[in-house]
Figure 1 (cartoon, rainbow, N blue to C red):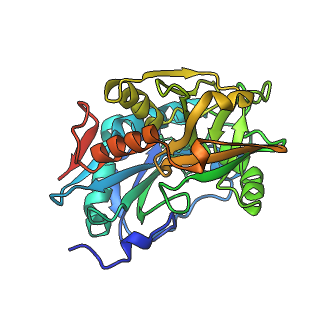
Figure 2 (cartoon, rainbow, N blue to C red; figure 1 turned 90 degrees about the horizontal axis):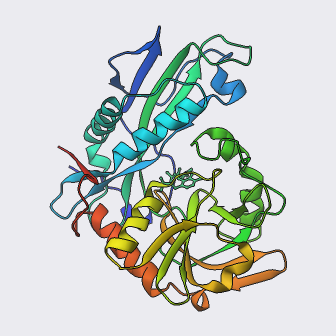
Figure 3 (cartoon, rainbow, N blue to C red; figure 1 turned 45 degrees about the vertical axis):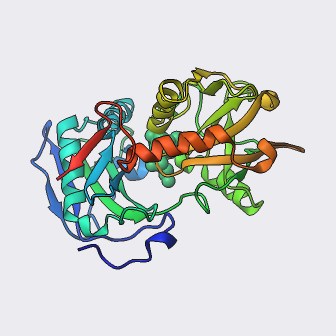
Length: 340
Ligand code: PLP
Ligand code: COI
């Protein structure tokens, strides 16, 4: 029985659900892991996660289909990315089968909170891996904690699929060229707080980051990747860069733009001074889904896409992506994992 919540009004806010998953790594191995209740953890004050940012996290969603079934979208990709983030910070990987089984357990245990089909809401899952234990030197931890919690969510950017204005971050980079931008680690988000706060204070949805070497090429849109459609409506482009997060949504859209919409789809450098090449632009990610970009302000200049309205290709991509996620359109092989 689904709980009674105002599903359509949900934003992206924390909610403490009955169950989460926890597993500990000690002496070279993960324990069996289990469901626990309660949203607090007790760790050493000297834990490397607290002092030196030795932690990584993920974000994925569970979707309720028309028939009432529940499914995950590409959780294997989240498992692989967490393993990559872990490797970058010298943390042990969580094996892919353990990761997926743990996500399934958490969804199943909290299934009354998986929003009903048709509300647009989903169950967001937050896997988190942290270095713990008594460890004050700058060195990797000797113990690790992996937990997954969940919460029902609606739109990340206000209104969801509503054209949103963004602003280029003024003198802030979120990650260095050879830094941790490719890894989903807390330090990147700490580095983004000031630019995000400034953007919000000025009435924008979020900050757009430029490449940290030359500050000429678009990197990311806050906590989402960037894509654009060329004026001839024939090409889908999205930035290639060593310092952006490899977005699972972005790689899914690259494939769908090509296979289903017949566009040429490529990762390439996207100069901030070439925005007039594009008729549409968008932000994409698990939380953001697809958020159309109404305009980008860079210093004193503002470029508006498609008169500030959602463009036709963005609309088609949104329908294709969310149609697959909610089980209304056929999915490429391996993209959906059921939660029975
Ligand atoms: N970029 C950043 C910085 C993010 O935090 C996210 C969210 O996960 C994304 C991009 C989008 O990635 P994905 O589509 O895998 O959610
Ligand atoms: C996600 O889309 O899962 C994200 O990580 C965004 C989050 C940082 C709010």
